[in-house]
Amino acid sequence: DVKVTQSSRYLVKRTGEKVFLECVQDMDHENMFWYRQDPGLGLRLIYFSYDVKMKEKGDIPEGYSVSREKKERFSLILESASTNQTSMYLCASSLGPVGNIQYFGAGTRLSVL
Amino acid sequence: GENVGLHLPTLSVQEGDNSIINCAYSNSASDYFIWYKQESGKGPQFIIDIRSNMDKRQGQRVTVLLNKTVKHLSLQIAATQPGDSAVYFCAEEGGSNYKLTFGKGTLLTVNP
Image 1 (spheres, each protein chain N blue to C red):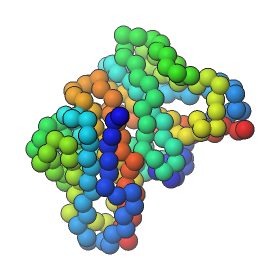
Image 2: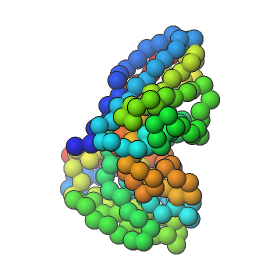
Image 3: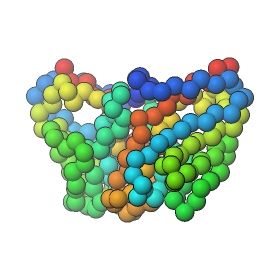
Image 4: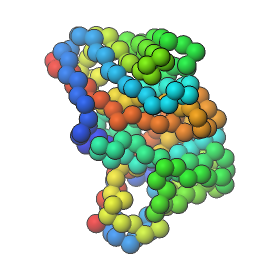
């Protein structure tokens, strides 16, 4: 069965803190993605990676960075958290280029105070 | 997420009725489409997909219809059950590799 695991369901951080969100998939998928989901705005792509050590900016990369040192793990980093980064963060993975289902994790609800 | 249903179009149906959820997509070059279901507090869950060389695809209790002429996608759920209550959204892929563009979603409420 397909499995995308996000390390935390809920996180509360303070403004200015460095925040790490971790995602692991066990399907040997090439592609991994980070989205944020906000009411009224839907899912917006932050970053994605199509191979180890490769990354590309999505639609809203500002204030975020990512790391993919191993195929199964994709980390989202908030270098200095701000209140406008309070959101639901969703990780996804897919098998390969184009025409493949993206499978999602359960999400991390991040609150920045 | 817990409040992902805010600000969304809503569809309310009676248990046992059929539901039809619509989606207008934006890119005429899109060639792959997916429907997702998202329950409160959970991540999106894959329901069914369809490629642009098809106009209909059926799964268990679900059917997706694709009309490329008017760039319209629909999800039909037969004999809707309370467990079908969720936000449903479509996603399209085309024009650039790897990336899906997601619709805002529709909140389906099933009344017992």
